[in-house]
Length: 428
Image 1 (cartoon, rainbow, N blue to C red):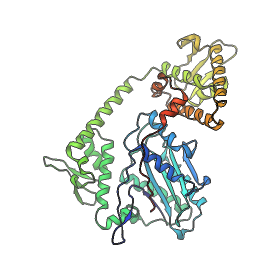
Image 2 (image 1 turned 60 degrees about the vertical axis):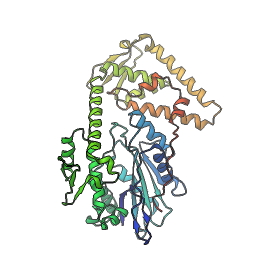
Image 3 (image 1 turned 90 degrees about the vertical axis):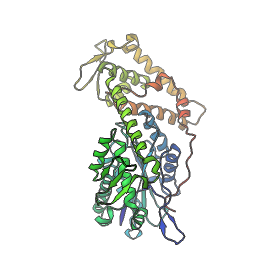
Image 4 (image 1 turned 120 degrees about the horizontal axis):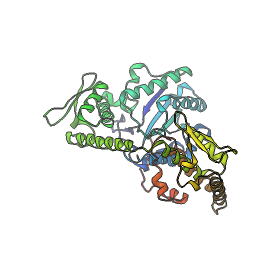
């Protein structure tokens, strides 16, 4: 029987020998995200052929790649990642390879479009299971992951459908609408629905900037909220159960004042984003940035054209013309003579630039470090470039890094994280 759950609680045994909820696992630090990525990819628990990823170059460097995306969009705080576990009971007798194929099919669903995912199928327990770590910042849009209770049910439904298609059983419909294992145990003591209410409040707060929006977003999830002159708020679940905000975990962060402060912060951030959008560069300036950044990394005319083509540009570099043209679908043609300073973007100047880039790359390879280290440095630099160039029609958030003139070594040093999280094992 296959199940899918959020790894948000660490179970533990009580004095009576029964399982009960443990401390909440909050992936709110870089150190904890790094620890969980190292944990799921540890070769004592999995095998090289049972690991994979979406929008990743290498599972062993998933943490660096997650951080590159977060830094590119300026979202390096609060919740860092999402942890899902898809598991099969021993009696299913599923092979690790088959479980990994199911996992690969699961992460290809449209719900995960643009999100980096590192996943690995573990074989160190009697039950075969796969861990999924999802970067909360979308690679393509910069938006953060939003997952309400209903969306969790939808993910479970997707997982169940795939498992059925492969001939494996799933939990009955009634049980799929409960939290897996520790949450199901908590349901017996009447606490699970409270946590689900708190999750719904968090989901609504993430996308609301006013009290009215918050109440509306709670209503969309099926919850009623009584927010009046009384000290505490009253939440009514879709099933009619009631709970006040002072009964939530870490209740001090859900007081009226705390909620209003979070809404005000969202409103300020929304206004800031609108201001930034109103200051978007002209189309010609956007083309200039794309050409400039491509020229800074290309080592040949062909590579230069290929980089721009990947961003949707049609490049006209003909021997019978003195100028180069750049055009995106639906826009006018821009010529290199429109750039400033012109002398740096002539055909001759660009070809010399490519030669210099080629020499720099050769020098990196000849450094005293092992060749694989030098290549790795170049990969991270180029990956950062691709991350931030993926939105060719928007302001380039990587310009600050370029203005600072950071070298590859400085970028690598900058990415080292000092923060360390506690070692966690979700299967004890």
